[in-house]
Length: 145
Image (cartoon, rainbow, N blue to C red; front, top):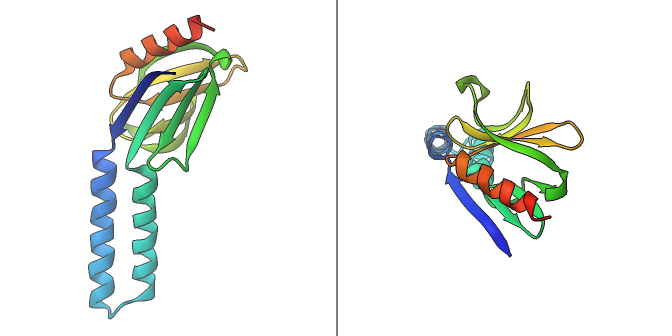
């Protein structure tokens, strides 16, 4: 049973990748079908599929975070999670997959996040536009195991 599901669209990420895709495509066509431009277009298009949004799902005693079509994902068993708290990331942490001073972070847009403290002592940040709702859902889910 799913107890929480939220998807955040990465507007800036999508617009940036689309802009790069258009620039590479136009440049490639102007250069007579330059193979490098075609490769860059392929990379940009694939990146768009991978990183257009970020979803968080709590279901079946696990919290799963995944980008785009779901090839890049991280799963936490609820009994691994010691605590969860809403945090605000500095702007320079950026978007995507990052190693921060507070552990790994998945983020697609904005500065809001939830920091998980794991029983192993490690931390993981999940970017979200609804940190308070996610914290409440994690606390409710971990209390019931």
